[in-house]
Length: 112
Image (cartoon, rainbow, N blue to C red; front, side, top):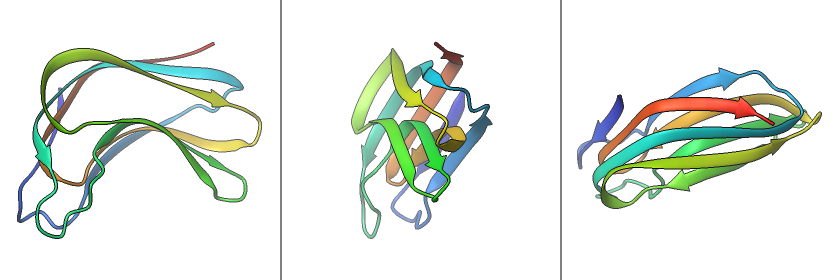
């Protein structure tokens, strides 16, 4: 499993991503996720998520993400995003900008 963990002394966000091939259609990521005690402390911003980030030719980014807060046992989750010819980059990302722990495992990505 990928594990991102931070505490009140963490002043920078934690970010892991995987570039994906850009194809027209709908891209789906399914994965298992669990999280523990995710909440903002001190100067941290709220925003811990898993999902897709697409960038077009003008540099505009679109997000299809699930945000996680508090605590939860392992569960299966899924994210979908429409991708078209305007998209120049696509990535699957895991982002933690708060105290707590975010775990992601068994990720699969498919196009339709």
